[in-house]
Length: 421
Ligand SMILES: [Fe+2]
Ligand SMILES: [Fe+2]
Ligand SMILES: [Fe+2]
Image (cartoon, rainbow, N blue to C red; front, side):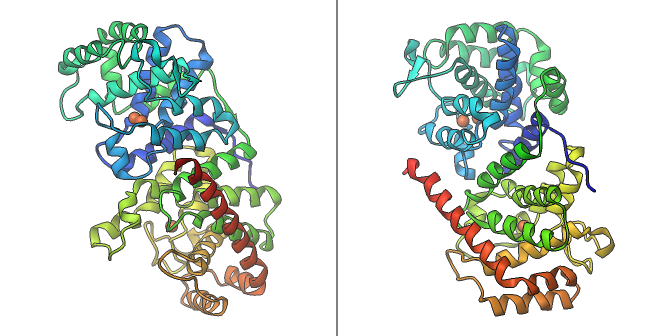
């Protein structure tokens, strides 16, 4: 019997934010630096611990709604043209997950300027103070050049922020920042390569533990961030989840293990966050370099989840879906003996979903053709023959569960896009 994972929300969120920041060297580490700066301002103001923790989580997730690389890069310019779209998408995503519903509001308004007090409200809604802190923290990080030594930049950054006090930023927050800015450790922490552990030491006091149910909904939420980035893949994970879960059940997995399989399914393409949407959506043939970037996604899924020890089983199930029994897969070239039954199930579920689902540029394969392909892959020792035999035996049932899951995911995708059009 596999032990149920106990996960700290903070650890998982930091890992996920790291994955999002892999998409370009320009944004690497941006989320957690903003988390650190926001936390420092919040603690200088003496905010209650609960609010300080919310600032860390909101900082680590605030640009999740910037789905394409272009949008992510735009958010790194000091003056933005259309800053609220990604903030609104972030809000729509996080408001669905109870432990992050407060964070959703902070994210929604993280680009609202103070505007001499007018920023108390935005479109008739009250803007929380945390959003103003996030806004300031975000703009501070944008002003730091990562190519130069940081302490030499402090004077210039402080002048720029001071100029915008009352206009872009709430004056009380600017004051709190100015006193922090005199301390070298603050800046050295911000650009430190150990910022993960610096952050985790500071939030250790107030931990929020995720049980399996909340882990499942957070994984589901993240599958939307992964899938909704491209209309080619908008419903892929839901198909993988449905087929992997039912295969696990036929293979005799317990109820708990089936839930873990669902979590692994939602997270299996997590590393695609590191792939620019411009590559995922490219209509023409990919260059070798672009293809390499796509192929690296399972490596990133693995390394993103690895620091969270309690997720090791789920990680192996999720991350080895492009490994093959004969060692010809990637990126680890694991062979049969290194691949657990759970990992083999995920590999079959992924291929099965990929070849049967419709994509905007092609129809999915017929059942007969798909089965032929899978049987051939089992015969070539690429996929596990026992798992493929289960799929063959229950093909109709598994396929209709996949179709239903993907259809309801299309609806969710369209509903999600509605307020944005
Ligand atoms: Fe932003
Ligand atoms: Fe940002
Ligand atoms: Fe994949």
